[in-house]
Length: 496
Image 1 (cartoon, rainbow, N blue to C red):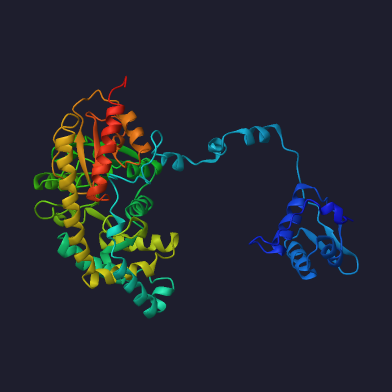
Image 2: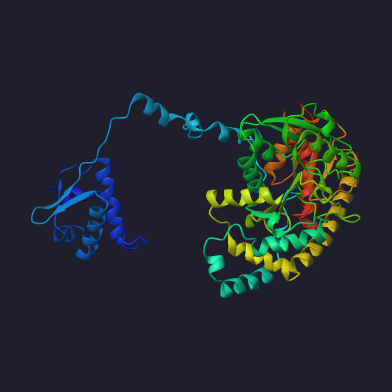
Protein backbone atom coordinates (compact mmCIF):
# COMPACT_ATOMS: atom_id res chain seq x y z
CA UNK A 1 0.00 0.00 0.00
CA UNK A 2 1.18 3.52 -0.71
CA UNK A 3 1.14 6.08 2.10
CA UNK A 4 0.77 9.82 2.14
CA UNK A 5 4.51 10.37 1.66
CA UNK A 6 4.38 8.36 -1.59
CA UNK A 7 2.12 11.03 -3.03
CA UNK A 8 4.48 13.94 -2.44
CA UNK A 9 4.75 14.33 -6.21
CA UNK A 10 1.09 15.26 -6.37
CA UNK A 11 0.65 19.04 -6.37
CA UNK A 12 -2.89 20.25 -5.86
CA UNK A 13 -3.60 23.93 -6.37
CA UNK A 14 -6.81 25.19 -4.78
CA UNK A 15 -6.52 28.44 -6.79
CA UNK A 16 -6.36 26.68 -10.15
CA UNK A 17 -9.28 26.90 -12.55
CA UNK A 18 -9.08 23.10 -12.84
CA UNK A 19 -11.23 21.43 -10.13
CA UNK A 20 -9.33 19.59 -7.38
CA UNK A 21 -10.85 16.21 -8.25
CA UNK A 22 -9.52 16.53 -11.82
CA UNK A 23 -6.10 17.54 -10.52
CA UNK A 24 -6.05 14.46 -8.25
CA UNK A 25 -7.38 12.20 -11.00
CA UNK A 26 -4.76 13.39 -13.51
CA UNK A 27 -1.93 13.21 -10.99
CA UNK A 28 -2.73 9.61 -10.00
CA UNK A 29 -3.27 8.61 -13.62
CA UNK A 30 0.15 9.95 -14.65
CA UNK A 31 1.84 8.16 -11.73
CA UNK A 32 0.17 4.88 -12.72
CA UNK A 33 1.11 5.23 -16.40
CA UNK A 34 4.71 6.15 -15.59
CA UNK A 35 5.10 3.23 -13.16
CA UNK A 36 5.64 5.48 -10.15
CA UNK A 37 2.74 3.55 -8.57
CA UNK A 38 3.25 -0.08 -9.65
CA UNK A 39 0.45 -2.42 -10.65
CA UNK A 40 -1.05 -4.33 -7.71
CA UNK A 41 -0.42 -1.49 -5.26
CA UNK A 42 -3.25 -0.96 -2.83
CA UNK A 43 -4.67 2.55 -2.70
CA UNK A 44 -5.41 4.00 0.79
CA UNK A 45 -9.00 4.59 1.76
CA UNK A 46 -10.68 7.83 0.78
CA UNK A 47 -10.56 8.98 4.43
CA UNK A 48 -6.78 8.46 4.65
CA UNK A 49 -6.17 10.18 1.31
CA UNK A 50 -8.36 13.15 2.18
CA UNK A 51 -6.50 13.65 5.47
CA UNK A 52 -3.02 13.29 3.97
CA UNK A 53 -3.82 15.58 1.02
CA UNK A 54 -5.91 18.07 2.97
CA UNK A 55 -8.93 17.84 0.68
CA UNK A 56 -12.50 16.62 1.14
CA UNK A 57 -13.45 12.94 0.94
CA UNK A 58 -15.97 13.82 -1.77
CA UNK A 59 -13.14 15.14 -3.93
CA UNK A 60 -11.11 11.97 -3.37
CA UNK A 61 -14.06 9.64 -4.02
CA UNK A 62 -14.93 11.49 -7.25
CA UNK A 63 -11.36 11.16 -8.56
CA UNK A 64 -11.06 7.48 -7.57
CA UNK A 65 -14.42 6.61 -9.10
CA UNK A 66 -13.29 8.11 -12.42
CA UNK A 67 -10.04 6.12 -12.33
CA UNK A 68 -12.00 2.94 -11.59
CA UNK A 69 -14.40 3.67 -14.45
CA UNK A 70 -11.48 4.10 -16.88
CA UNK A 71 -9.76 0.91 -15.72
CA UNK A 72 -6.73 2.39 -13.94
CA UNK A 73 -7.96 1.06 -10.58
CA UNK A 74 -9.83 -2.06 -9.60
CA UNK A 75 -12.10 -2.03 -6.56
CA UNK A 76 -13.53 -5.11 -4.90
CA UNK A 77 -15.94 -4.83 -2.00
CA UNK A 78 -14.24 -5.85 1.25
CA UNK A 79 -10.72 -6.09 -0.19
CA UNK A 80 -9.90 -2.50 -1.10
CA UNK A 81 -8.82 -0.63 -4.23
CA UNK A 82 -5.78 -1.68 -6.25
CA UNK A 83 -3.80 -0.31 -9.19
CA UNK A 84 -4.28 -2.28 -12.39
CA UNK A 85 -1.09 -3.52 -14.05
CA UNK A 86 -0.41 -1.29 -17.04
CA UNK A 87 1.41 -3.07 -19.88
CA UNK A 88 4.68 -1.41 -20.80
CA UNK A 89 7.42 -2.37 -23.15
CA UNK A 90 11.04 -1.36 -23.35
CA UNK A 91 11.65 1.02 -26.25
CA UNK A 92 13.55 -0.61 -29.09
CA UNK A 93 16.53 1.03 -30.72
CA UNK A 94 14.36 1.89 -33.74
CA UNK A 95 11.73 3.51 -31.52
CA UNK A 96 14.37 5.56 -29.73
CA UNK A 97 15.77 6.65 -33.09
CA UNK A 98 12.27 7.54 -34.27
CA UNK A 99 11.71 9.73 -31.21
CA UNK A 100 14.91 11.61 -32.03
CA UNK A 101 13.75 12.28 -35.60
CA UNK A 102 12.36 15.75 -36.36
CA UNK A 103 8.58 15.74 -35.92
CA UNK A 104 8.08 16.51 -39.62
CA UNK A 105 9.80 13.25 -40.64
CA UNK A 106 8.54 10.82 -38.00
CA UNK A 107 5.55 9.60 -40.02
CA UNK A 108 6.89 9.86 -43.58
CA UNK A 109 6.61 6.11 -44.08
CA UNK A 110 2.90 6.16 -43.21
CA UNK A 111 1.83 8.97 -45.53
CA UNK A 112 -0.18 7.83 -48.56
CA UNK A 113 0.84 8.62 -52.12
CA UNK A 114 -2.32 10.70 -52.45
CA UNK A 115 -1.42 12.89 -49.46
CA UNK A 116 2.14 13.32 -50.72
CA UNK A 117 0.82 14.49 -54.06
CA UNK A 118 -1.22 17.15 -52.24
CA UNK A 119 1.92 18.69 -50.72
CA UNK A 120 2.00 21.30 -53.45
CA UNK A 121 3.64 24.12 -51.47
CA UNK A 122 7.12 22.92 -50.59
CA UNK A 123 9.64 25.68 -51.02
CA UNK A 124 8.44 29.13 -49.99
CA UNK A 125 6.22 30.00 -47.05
CA UNK A 126 2.46 30.38 -47.36
CA UNK A 127 0.87 33.80 -47.53
CA UNK A 128 -2.43 32.95 -45.79
CA UNK A 129 -1.80 35.23 -42.81
CA UNK A 130 -0.43 38.15 -44.78
CA UNK A 131 -1.64 41.61 -43.85
CA UNK A 132 -1.12 43.73 -46.97
CA UNK A 133 -1.58 43.33 -50.75
CA UNK A 134 -2.97 39.78 -50.47
CA UNK A 135 -3.71 38.60 -54.00
CA UNK A 136 -6.31 35.94 -53.24
CA UNK A 137 -8.67 37.11 -50.49
CA UNK A 138 -11.63 39.48 -50.21
CA UNK A 139 -11.85 42.18 -47.56
CA UNK A 140 -13.71 40.54 -44.68
CA UNK A 141 -14.44 44.01 -43.27
CA UNK A 142 -16.97 44.53 -46.07
CA UNK A 143 -18.97 41.46 -45.06
CA UNK A 144 -22.63 42.43 -44.36
CA UNK A 145 -22.52 41.51 -40.69
CA UNK A 146 -25.82 43.10 -39.63
CA UNK A 147 -27.82 41.52 -42.46
CA UNK A 148 -26.16 38.16 -41.86
CA UNK A 149 -26.94 38.35 -38.15
CA UNK A 150 -30.57 39.22 -38.86
CA UNK A 151 -30.96 36.32 -41.30
CA UNK A 152 -29.20 33.94 -38.91
CA UNK A 153 -31.69 34.83 -36.17
CA UNK A 154 -34.60 34.31 -38.55
CA UNK A 155 -33.34 30.92 -39.71
CA UNK A 156 -32.75 29.69 -36.17
CA UNK A 157 -36.13 30.99 -35.04
CA UNK A 158 -38.04 29.42 -37.91
CA UNK A 159 -35.96 26.23 -38.28
CA UNK A 160 -37.84 22.99 -38.75
CA UNK A 161 -37.09 19.35 -39.41
CA UNK A 162 -35.96 20.13 -42.98
CA UNK A 163 -32.77 21.80 -41.81
CA UNK A 164 -32.15 20.23 -38.40
CA UNK A 165 -32.21 16.65 -39.73
CA UNK A 166 -30.17 15.17 -42.55
CA UNK A 167 -31.33 16.65 -45.81
CA UNK A 168 -33.29 14.73 -48.43
CA UNK A 169 -30.36 14.91 -50.80
CA UNK A 170 -32.23 14.25 -54.07
CA UNK A 171 -34.59 17.20 -53.58
CA UNK A 172 -33.09 20.61 -54.46
CA UNK A 173 -32.48 22.79 -51.43
CA UNK A 174 -33.59 26.41 -51.13
CA UNK A 175 -30.04 27.50 -51.91
CA UNK A 176 -29.88 25.34 -55.05
CA UNK A 177 -33.16 26.88 -56.20
CA UNK A 178 -31.86 30.40 -55.56
CA UNK A 179 -28.55 29.71 -57.30
CA UNK A 180 -30.43 28.50 -60.41
CA UNK A 181 -32.34 31.79 -60.53
CA UNK A 182 -29.34 33.99 -59.66
CA UNK A 183 -26.93 32.36 -62.13
CA UNK A 184 -29.36 32.85 -65.02
CA UNK A 185 -29.33 36.60 -64.47
CA UNK A 186 -25.74 37.14 -63.33
CA UNK A 187 -23.87 34.68 -65.59
CA UNK A 188 -26.29 33.82 -68.40
CA UNK A 189 -26.48 30.14 -67.42
CA UNK A 190 -29.91 28.55 -67.80
CA UNK A 191 -30.36 25.53 -65.56
CA UNK A 192 -32.90 23.76 -63.38
CA UNK A 193 -32.41 23.51 -59.60
CA UNK A 194 -31.94 19.74 -60.07
CA UNK A 195 -28.74 20.53 -62.00
CA UNK A 196 -27.25 22.50 -59.10
CA UNK A 197 -25.25 20.67 -56.42
CA UNK A 198 -24.04 22.62 -53.40
CA UNK A 199 -20.55 21.89 -52.07
CA UNK A 200 -18.11 22.99 -49.38
CA UNK A 201 -16.35 25.31 -51.82
CA UNK A 202 -14.54 24.94 -55.14
CA UNK A 203 -11.82 22.58 -53.87
CA UNK A 204 -14.46 20.28 -52.42
CA UNK A 205 -16.27 20.36 -55.75
CA UNK A 206 -13.13 19.27 -57.62
CA UNK A 207 -12.55 16.47 -55.09
CA UNK A 208 -16.13 15.28 -55.57
CA UNK A 209 -15.68 15.27 -59.34
CA UNK A 210 -12.43 13.36 -59.03
CA UNK A 211 -14.13 10.72 -56.85
CA UNK A 212 -17.11 10.55 -59.16
CA UNK A 213 -15.39 10.49 -62.55
CA UNK A 214 -11.70 9.62 -62.34
CA UNK A 215 -9.64 6.47 -62.01
CA UNK A 216 -5.85 6.21 -61.64
CA UNK A 217 -4.22 6.62 -65.05
CA UNK A 218 -6.96 8.84 -66.50
CA UNK A 219 -5.74 11.84 -68.47
CA UNK A 220 -6.50 15.43 -67.45
CA UNK A 221 -5.83 18.54 -69.54
CA UNK A 222 -4.89 21.37 -67.20
CA UNK A 223 -4.04 25.01 -67.77
CA UNK A 224 -0.34 25.89 -67.84
CA UNK A 225 0.06 28.08 -65.86
CA UNK A 226 -2.84 27.18 -63.60
CA UNK A 227 -4.00 26.79 -60.03
CA UNK A 228 -1.41 24.63 -58.28
CA UNK A 229 -3.71 23.37 -55.52
CA UNK A 230 -6.30 22.10 -58.01
CA UNK A 231 -3.60 20.50 -60.17
CA UNK A 232 -2.35 18.63 -57.13
CA UNK A 233 -5.84 17.21 -56.47
CA UNK A 234 -5.88 15.55 -59.89
CA UNK A 235 -2.32 14.32 -59.40
CA UNK A 236 -3.26 12.86 -56.02
CA UNK A 237 -5.88 10.65 -57.73
CA UNK A 238 -3.14 9.14 -59.89
CA UNK A 239 -4.14 11.01 -63.04
CA UNK A 240 -1.80 12.02 -65.84
CA UNK A 241 -1.95 15.81 -66.05
CA UNK A 242 -1.22 17.23 -69.52
CA UNK A 243 -0.30 20.94 -69.75
CA UNK A 244 -2.75 23.00 -71.82
CA UNK A 245 -0.63 26.06 -72.52
CA UNK A 246 -2.16 29.51 -72.07
CA UNK A 247 -1.71 31.99 -74.91
CA UNK A 248 -3.20 35.44 -75.54
CA UNK A 249 -6.70 33.90 -75.74
CA UNK A 250 -6.42 31.64 -72.71
CA UNK A 251 -5.86 27.87 -72.52
CA UNK A 252 -5.35 26.43 -76.01
CA UNK A 253 -6.84 22.95 -76.47
CA UNK A 254 -5.05 22.53 -79.82
CA UNK A 255 -1.80 22.19 -77.86
CA UNK A 256 -3.11 18.79 -76.71
CA UNK A 257 -2.28 16.18 -79.34
CA UNK A 258 -4.13 13.29 -77.66
CA UNK A 259 -7.76 12.24 -77.81
CA UNK A 260 -7.94 10.22 -74.58
CA UNK A 261 -8.48 13.26 -72.34
CA UNK A 262 -11.24 12.53 -69.83
CA UNK A 263 -11.45 15.97 -68.19
CA UNK A 264 -10.16 19.45 -69.02
CA UNK A 265 -9.91 22.08 -66.29
CA UNK A 266 -10.19 25.74 -67.34
CA UNK A 267 -10.79 29.21 -65.90
CA UNK A 268 -12.42 30.91 -68.88
CA UNK A 269 -13.90 34.21 -67.65
CA UNK A 270 -10.69 35.18 -65.80
CA UNK A 271 -7.76 32.86 -66.33
CA UNK A 272 -5.89 32.20 -63.11
CA UNK A 273 -3.20 33.58 -62.89
CA UNK A 274 -2.93 35.40 -66.27
CA UNK A 275 -6.29 37.28 -65.85
CA UNK A 276 -7.14 36.63 -69.55
CA UNK A 277 -10.83 36.61 -70.50
CA UNK A 278 -11.35 33.84 -73.08
CA UNK A 279 -12.79 35.36 -76.28
CA UNK A 280 -15.76 33.87 -78.09
CA UNK A 281 -13.68 32.20 -80.81
CA UNK A 282 -11.56 30.31 -78.27
CA UNK A 283 -14.64 29.30 -76.29
CA UNK A 284 -16.19 27.73 -79.38
CA UNK A 285 -12.86 26.05 -80.21
CA UNK A 286 -12.77 24.64 -76.69
CA UNK A 287 -16.31 23.26 -76.94
CA UNK A 288 -15.70 21.75 -80.41
CA UNK A 289 -12.46 20.14 -79.23
CA UNK A 290 -14.19 18.67 -76.18
CA UNK A 291 -17.02 17.29 -78.32
CA UNK A 292 -14.56 15.70 -80.78
CA UNK A 293 -12.57 14.06 -77.96
CA UNK A 294 -15.52 13.10 -75.76
CA UNK A 295 -14.02 15.27 -73.00
CA UNK A 296 -15.85 16.88 -70.09
CA UNK A 297 -14.79 20.43 -69.26
CA UNK A 298 -14.63 21.60 -65.65
CA UNK A 299 -14.90 25.40 -65.59
CA UNK A 300 -13.94 27.18 -62.37
CA UNK A 301 -15.47 30.67 -62.46
CA UNK A 302 -13.19 31.96 -59.68
CA UNK A 303 -13.49 35.70 -59.08
CA UNK A 304 -15.49 36.38 -62.24
CA UNK A 305 -17.99 38.54 -60.30
CA UNK A 306 -15.33 41.23 -59.99
CA UNK A 307 -14.88 42.93 -63.34
CA UNK A 308 -14.31 46.68 -63.16
CA UNK A 309 -14.43 47.79 -66.80
CA UNK A 310 -17.32 46.91 -69.07
CA UNK A 311 -19.94 44.27 -68.46
CA UNK A 312 -19.39 40.77 -67.08
CA UNK A 313 -17.79 38.18 -69.37
CA UNK A 314 -20.14 35.19 -69.86
CA UNK A 315 -18.61 31.87 -68.81
CA UNK A 316 -18.01 28.94 -71.13
CA UNK A 317 -20.99 27.20 -69.54
CA UNK A 318 -23.34 29.85 -70.96
CA UNK A 319 -22.54 28.53 -74.47
CA UNK A 320 -22.82 24.86 -73.53
CA UNK A 321 -25.69 23.21 -75.39
CA UNK A 322 -24.53 19.61 -75.11
CA UNK A 323 -23.89 19.25 -71.37
CA UNK A 324 -20.11 19.15 -71.85
CA UNK A 325 -19.27 21.74 -69.19
CA UNK A 326 -19.43 21.31 -65.42
CA UNK A 327 -19.49 24.77 -63.89
CA UNK A 328 -17.88 25.34 -60.48
CA UNK A 329 -18.74 28.43 -58.43
CA UNK A 330 -18.35 29.53 -54.83
CA UNK A 331 -19.18 32.34 -52.43
CA UNK A 332 -15.62 32.42 -51.07
CA UNK A 333 -14.58 35.59 -52.87
CA UNK A 334 -17.89 37.43 -52.60
CA UNK A 335 -18.70 36.68 -48.94
CA UNK A 336 -16.19 34.92 -46.67
CA UNK A 337 -13.72 32.17 -47.48
CA UNK A 338 -14.42 30.46 -44.16
CA UNK A 339 -18.13 29.99 -44.98
CA UNK A 340 -17.15 27.12 -47.30
CA UNK A 341 -20.22 27.34 -49.50
CA UNK A 342 -19.91 26.54 -53.19
CA UNK A 343 -21.82 24.80 -55.96
CA UNK A 344 -21.61 22.97 -59.27
CA UNK A 345 -23.91 23.06 -62.26
CA UNK A 346 -23.85 19.79 -64.18
CA UNK A 347 -26.07 17.55 -66.33
CA UNK A 348 -28.95 16.23 -64.27
CA UNK A 349 -27.90 12.57 -64.52
CA UNK A 350 -24.43 13.43 -63.18
CA UNK A 351 -25.91 15.72 -60.53
CA UNK A 352 -28.02 12.88 -59.14
CA UNK A 353 -24.98 10.59 -58.87
CA UNK A 354 -22.99 13.39 -57.25
CA UNK A 355 -25.73 13.95 -54.66
CA UNK A 356 -25.66 10.26 -53.77
CA UNK A 357 -21.88 10.46 -53.39
CA UNK A 358 -22.31 13.37 -50.99
CA UNK A 359 -24.94 11.40 -49.08
CA UNK A 360 -22.54 8.51 -48.54
CA UNK A 361 -19.34 10.50 -47.94
CA UNK A 362 -20.62 13.50 -45.97
CA UNK A 363 -24.25 12.68 -45.02
CA UNK A 364 -25.18 16.34 -45.36
CA UNK A 365 -23.73 19.78 -45.96
CA UNK A 366 -24.26 22.63 -43.43
CA UNK A 367 -27.91 23.44 -44.04
CA UNK A 368 -28.10 26.34 -41.61
CA UNK A 369 -25.42 28.22 -43.54
CA UNK A 370 -27.01 27.28 -46.86
CA UNK A 371 -30.36 28.62 -45.68
CA UNK A 372 -28.80 31.95 -44.70
CA UNK A 373 -26.99 32.33 -48.04
CA UNK A 374 -30.21 31.39 -49.86
CA UNK A 375 -32.14 34.13 -48.08
CA UNK A 376 -29.31 36.57 -48.73
CA UNK A 377 -29.82 35.94 -52.46
CA UNK A 378 -33.61 35.73 -52.32
CA UNK A 379 -34.02 39.07 -50.55
CA UNK A 380 -31.67 40.93 -52.91
CA UNK A 381 -28.98 41.52 -50.26
CA UNK A 382 -26.37 39.52 -52.15
CA UNK A 383 -26.68 41.51 -55.39
CA UNK A 384 -26.45 44.81 -53.49
CA UNK A 385 -23.42 43.50 -51.58
CA UNK A 386 -21.67 42.54 -54.84
CA UNK A 387 -22.36 45.96 -56.33
CA UNK A 388 -20.86 47.66 -53.28
CA UNK A 389 -17.77 45.44 -53.33
CA UNK A 390 -17.16 46.03 -57.03
CA UNK A 391 -17.32 49.79 -56.51
CA UNK A 392 -14.86 49.70 -53.60
CA UNK A 393 -12.48 47.24 -55.24
CA UNK A 394 -12.42 49.30 -58.46
CA UNK A 395 -11.18 52.32 -56.50
CA UNK A 396 -8.53 50.21 -54.81
CA UNK A 397 -7.36 48.80 -58.12
CA UNK A 398 -7.08 52.31 -59.55
CA UNK A 399 -4.97 53.42 -56.59
CA UNK A 400 -2.64 50.44 -56.88
CA UNK A 401 -2.26 51.00 -60.64
CA UNK A 402 -1.36 54.65 -60.02
CA UNK A 403 1.35 53.67 -57.54
CA UNK A 404 2.78 50.86 -59.68
CA UNK A 405 2.91 53.05 -62.78
CA UNK A 406 4.61 55.91 -60.97
CA UNK A 407 6.66 54.60 -58.04
CA UNK A 408 7.58 51.27 -59.66
CA UNK A 409 8.11 52.44 -63.25
CA UNK A 410 11.74 51.29 -63.06
CA UNK A 411 10.77 47.88 -61.62
CA UNK A 412 7.64 46.73 -63.48
CA UNK A 413 6.35 47.07 -67.00
CA UNK A 414 3.15 49.17 -67.06
CA UNK A 415 0.37 46.84 -65.85
CA UNK A 416 -3.14 46.76 -67.26
CA UNK A 417 -6.57 46.82 -65.67
CA UNK A 418 -7.69 43.35 -64.68
CA UNK A 419 -10.66 41.62 -63.13
CA UNK A 420 -10.40 39.79 -59.86
CA UNK A 421 -8.31 40.69 -56.83
CA UNK A 422 -4.78 41.31 -58.13
CA UNK A 423 -2.64 42.94 -60.80
CA UNK A 424 -0.07 40.94 -62.75
CA UNK A 425 3.19 42.91 -62.88
CA UNK A 426 6.10 41.78 -65.08
CA UNK A 427 9.60 42.65 -63.90
CA UNK A 428 11.63 44.80 -66.28
CA UNK A 429 14.81 43.13 -65.04
CA UNK A 430 14.33 39.43 -65.75
CA UNK A 431 17.54 38.57 -63.88
CA UNK A 432 15.95 39.56 -60.57
CA UNK A 433 16.16 37.03 -57.75
CA UNK A 434 12.40 36.64 -57.36
CA UNK A 435 12.62 34.01 -54.63
CA UNK A 436 14.55 36.38 -52.40
CA UNK A 437 12.03 39.12 -53.09
CA UNK A 438 9.11 36.84 -52.19
CA UNK A 439 10.71 35.54 -49.01
CA UNK A 440 11.39 39.09 -47.87
CA UNK A 441 7.79 40.02 -48.72
CA UNK A 442 6.56 37.22 -46.47
CA UNK A 443 8.73 38.60 -43.65
CA UNK A 444 6.93 41.93 -44.06
CA UNK A 445 3.41 40.39 -44.14
CA UNK A 446 2.86 41.02 -47.85
CA UNK A 447 0.52 38.54 -49.52
CA UNK A 448 1.94 38.84 -53.03
CA UNK A 449 2.75 35.78 -55.16
CA UNK A 450 5.19 35.08 -57.97
CA UNK A 451 3.94 33.92 -61.37
CA UNK A 452 6.28 30.93 -61.40
CA UNK A 453 4.30 29.34 -58.55
CA UNK A 454 1.48 28.55 -61.00
CA UNK A 455 3.67 26.60 -63.44
CA UNK A 456 3.98 22.85 -63.00
CA UNK A 457 7.80 23.07 -62.97
CA UNK A 458 7.80 26.28 -60.84
CA UNK A 459 9.51 28.20 -63.64
CA UNK A 460 7.76 30.88 -65.69
CA UNK A 461 8.98 32.13 -69.09
CA UNK A 462 8.87 35.66 -67.71
CA UNK A 463 9.22 36.63 -64.07
CA UNK A 464 6.26 38.51 -62.65
CA UNK A 465 4.57 39.33 -59.35
CA UNK A 466 0.87 39.14 -58.51
CA UNK A 467 0.01 42.10 -56.28
CA UNK A 468 -3.37 42.16 -54.55
CA UNK A 469 -5.60 45.14 -53.85
CA UNK A 470 -9.04 43.85 -52.81
CA UNK A 471 -8.26 42.97 -49.18
CA UNK A 472 -6.36 46.23 -48.49
CA UNK A 473 -7.91 49.68 -48.22
CA UNK A 474 -6.18 52.62 -49.93
CA UNK A 475 -4.11 53.50 -46.85
CA UNK A 476 -2.97 49.88 -46.55
CA UNK A 477 -2.16 49.76 -50.26
CA UNK A 478 0.10 52.80 -49.85
CA UNK A 479 1.82 51.26 -46.82
CA UNK A 480 2.08 47.85 -48.47
CA UNK A 481 3.63 49.22 -51.65
CA UNK A 482 6.25 51.10 -49.62
CA UNK A 483 7.14 47.82 -47.91
CA UNK A 484 7.18 46.09 -51.30
CA UNK A 485 9.56 48.67 -52.70
CA UNK A 486 11.92 48.03 -49.82
CA UNK A 487 11.76 44.27 -50.37
CA UNK A 488 12.60 44.67 -54.06
CA UNK A 489 15.42 47.16 -53.47
CA UNK A 490 16.92 44.95 -50.77
CA UNK A 491 17.06 41.84 -52.96
CA UNK A 492 17.03 42.97 -56.58
CA UNK A 493 19.56 40.60 -58.17
CA UNK A 494 21.14 37.19 -57.58
CA UNK A 495 24.11 38.91 -56.00
CA UNK A 496 21.97 41.35 -53.95
